[in-house]
Image (cartoon, rainbow, N blue to C red; front, top):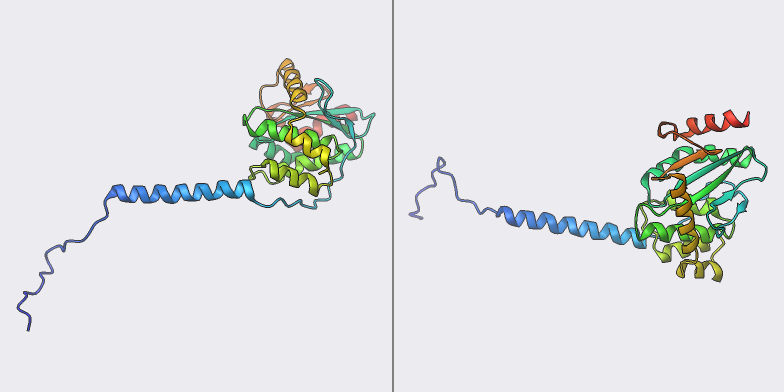
Length: 234
């Protein structure tokens, strides 16, 4: 029989407590681990081309012409849409999502041509790299498809390996394309495009001009773009 007195239920029992500092460290370690995992996924996730049925417009002005963007569509259209974009710009991705179908229709039916002006504003490393890759794809007739995929999977890091894989899946992954990616072939052209944009007063992305007239920020949507084009084309 135990001689130990019964516990007094009115007295608070001593419990082992975890120091707040330890909790903070644990939380930080978990957060760091999650961040590393996400970053790894962004740079190593598989490239999958979506079959969205968007027609590929002809390239009228290919990359490489000093101070000129990449124009696609049908020659002779009454309207031209100048689109200044950055492939690391989240607002550009939103603009693409909101207006892509409208622009596709305008270009496909010959109402308007579209001129891409790839900028290098947002990310000093990624923006030039993705702009160069876009130029390499555009030189092979895949401007729209390549841009569509870069924005369609915006969460990717789009490493050099992923860009090369995307080119292969789009049917432009030949030696010339690979060399353009690896050697940053279009760097000089991109600088000339940036200078032309500076001369025009472009300070951010997306910036849109319709036949030389800048579209106001509150009209950077499908309806605003459609109305601006219709006012000229009608």
